[in-house]
Image (cartoon, rainbow, N blue to C red; front, side, top):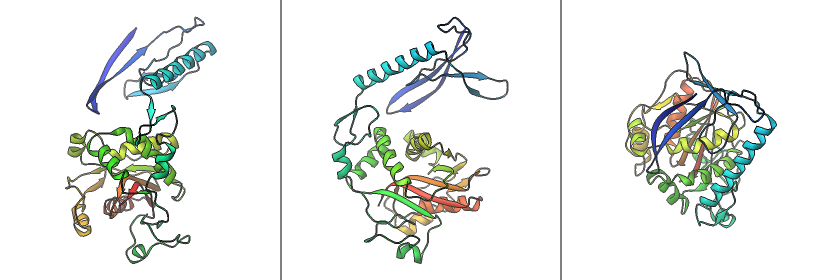
Length: 307
């Protein structure tokens, strides 16, 4: 018996993708034994089975495949990867140089030519002239310390990073996400240890509906998959605010007052806020204040670039 269910239609890069799941029951493997498992239409074959109880959503249960079935699945996955590389080859997102499947999506020359931040304040990620000793922050943070404890941004907001971020946000060029996620993973090593939750800066629901996605959430997902750190999903942008770009620091601060709220409780001690660009730090600062008021002990910030 095969049952099909059509999921919600999502728009991404002007392509409507219909999510289908096929539930297979009483399927026989190559040894002739009954093997209840699910074949999912996805990029790779995973040995999982979905079961629905009478009260909740689908649950994932791992099953052990026979050696013959496992070898067949591995061969099919290998053929799928080869076909994907032949039809849709990996390339450097900046110059188009062809890359092997699994390589960093930025070639070595482009990676070296990116506007990397050298020395930076560990509190606000603002570039400084010399490397500061441990525990010492810049003069701006000493006069007006931000509510978050640490921040990291590996790149300056200069060409080609600024053009790529704008294309990702406003023109749906989401192929930049894996490249920027790699730089975020590198920058994350400079932050304090003990991070147990990731929070992408939330968009108001109307802006996210018009844009079709949240760029901070897209950047968060590769980090979540690589590190296994949980995502915070109960912090929302409860008030629609104008764009921060073009506003002065005081106007940015006034623009974000009471813009975020926590629904329920944040079950984390050290939350990492993920965003695309840190300009004045007002967005992350307001979000950090909301998290600290809800009981979070420590907040750090991670971004692609520092403007």
